[in-house]
Image 1 (cartoon, rainbow, N blue to C red):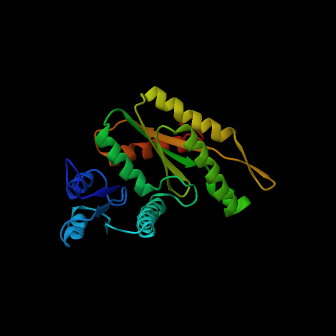
Image 2 (cartoon, rainbow, N blue to C red):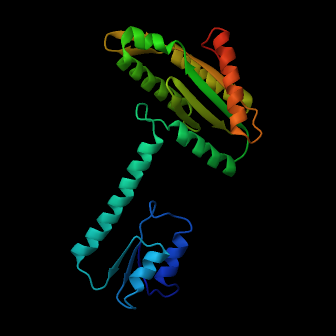
Image 3 (spheres, rainbow, N blue to C red):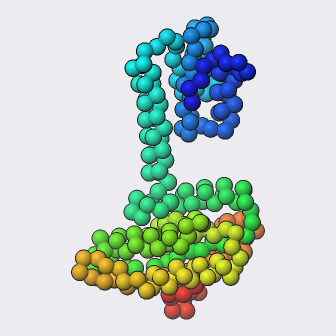
Length: 236
């Protein structure tokens, strides 16, 4: 946003202050502009939340340099946030971002929710038989399948061979149908790695019993995952 200080209905510093109630400096850059006012006007703009200030008259080259510099700052912050919130291998959100995201979602839309945890069956054997590069490739393919089925929900890598999903606005029957479709596609996909075809499966523990405490719900899904493993794996 590029705003002059002297506008018909509102001063530029007031508009910047209003913008900052909704958008952070990392989301929207604001450059204040003015040819009038005291020498302290630049400080007033910065205090109100502007990223930068430029006095009129200015040359075009300076103007474009300031704009590009502020855009690069926003892009750099976005890249850092992405790296902090994303699992480097699968490009899914990581565990920390998963919890931050669902807490925000629950505040905005506290309707029916279902949590599910996916555990790849006998994953160690894949690493032992084909190598860790093959294991990494399998994790990427499984992540793609999860992401495809959970396009309108939220899925993350929990760590190791575990993934977690947060499903909202689905009844239990629909959530179960979606999760079982994920399980079936993974089990029926022969994952190609070099000259090998690797077959994998997942066990899933899910819970829709939510009273506002995510830790309790996650404990329940862990218990259900244990039951799925004890009952022979490759099941919900």
